[in-house]
Image (cartoon, rainbow, N blue to C red; front, side, top):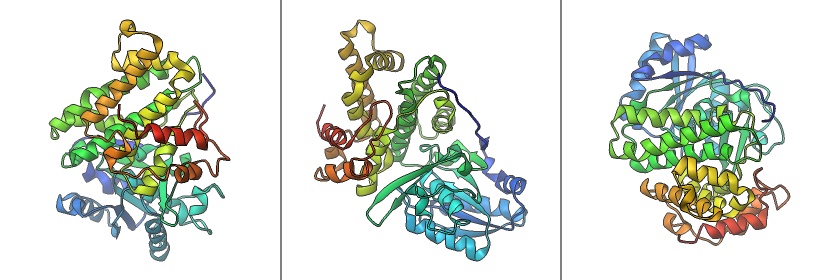
Length: 394
């Protein structure tokens, strides 16, 4: 186990009706009289959530300015518009209502407002944020875990580059998580969310760090709980208890606890990000295609760990066969689970072209100068090989 520091400062407010506390929670952290509310579609107005938020803020004498229109794979242009609104209106608190895209947009606006340069500098690694506006979240989609994570991922429409920043500074001050707010989501979005949270855990699980049995087992327990409840919540979308398990798992998958003391990988996310950046495919759908292919490509690097994954997570019997057979059976069962969730497993399943492998691999590795991942370093040619595996029907 390696040295680590763990601190997650996001206050979690979980359960039924908790969205009604948003005004008093904002007042706890700020004496602001205006809030920028960042959201995606008008669904939050049709289902009454926006009215509930407005009423709660009004009780605290807090006015709302709106920034709607957040899209999946959130756009830099909207971030820049939000920065302009905050500066012009002297806003110093941002409330995101939605999933990872709304939250990541709010985080990007937060660091962009006090910065004299272009916020995209941070995503290119040209500078590091030193200040941010406070952000908070009302979750409506269980997936990204951005509500208490140190990450923000933004897409620049100029070239369709998708890049991230990661630092504790941008963790929201609080997150309100009411599983009931996710009941009306389409099954496809829930499927994407389940895949996303599983891969967040597996990016931590597949590590070269030794003597990490505690966090291994925490990861395995979280994965098993998601598997047990994932398909069930699609069949019973208004089963509060089942949905609560999934929603809370999405937060724990990415709040930093499961990676304590271990080096994380993140190669698969970088490979998948290029797909969603170029083709605007849902992030979870790109991961359901990439992650099993990445596993097939690298499993021989540490067969013991992949056998452990197959046995402990997917109940593959050690008597199933030789080492390779056990490893591959675990991957096969994961693919089968993704399929049950309605997720694509190949480029063809997702209706994606297969003529941009070199372009995506070049972007991800900065012209083959910086490999991705830590478990196994993946350069441009290796990434192209993995994309090719993503075209093969298993």
